[in-house]
Length: 329
Ligand code: UDP
Ligand code: MG
Image (cartoon, rainbow, N blue to C red; front, side):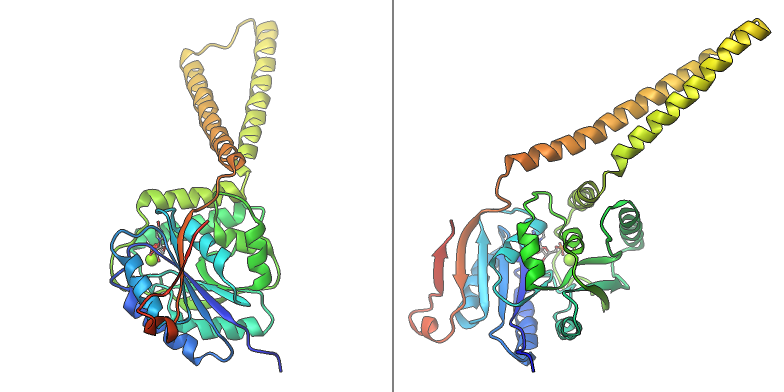
């Protein structure tokens, strides 16, 4: 018999105060039923402004399994997830969203599948609850990216899933700033498998991903896992050179044998605007990669920790309702 693993549930929280009680209750109930332990819940407060942080601190008084990593401001979902990954101590880690779209009740299934010998068990989303336009965009994006990327990226899966300790170690080793964790997880390798989990609608509150943030995440996924646009530029350039050589040959032949030169102002304008357009487009793409290189070489930390609070039932509660507080560094 192997020892049942210690589980860490990592959750990023940004302005979810209305959902916290249900979240804590449901995750707590699931952990209660799991063998082994002590399990932990690492919640990263990503600079909430609605009192989520205070609510979490209060919850830590009564919940010994709770660890709260409070960031100094809002750093974004992927940075918050990375902060959570840097602070978990369990043998296996489950990443999930704090809005109950990822049902905590799926955790036992993830764990069972992990024990069958998989280092990564990710939730494949079926029947998403978003509008059809968003759903179609997600589906198209995941498929294009999977095709273009140099890593085998699973389609239709988000960050919700389980990772073994050694996968988490690999993710911690990846120093990149523009993080696309579900891609990095695939990059880490080891046996990986998807299980089907129905993705619920948000339990309350509003999506914290504006269209802009969603597009930024898609770009991070795209540009960190594919250099296809750079190749496309080279291929298009080659094609243009080939065509223009053929046309030059034709012009010489036409002049010498037929006695006239090709004419056409309109064609000239079309070709010129097309080529300068593609030039600028690819210059922009090049700039995108360059900007990312610049961001990476600065090597700024991904997030700044303000405070770490560890839950302590019993003693701490009796000692005047103050959970243990550590200052960040
Ligand atoms: N989140 C975060 N920082 C942010 C935005 C979101 O920590 O800047 C958290 C949010 O609280 C939630 C999770 O990330 O727990 C997923 O966000 P959301 O549900 O808004 O994204 P969606 O499901 O709409 O893509
Ligand atoms: Mg959500």
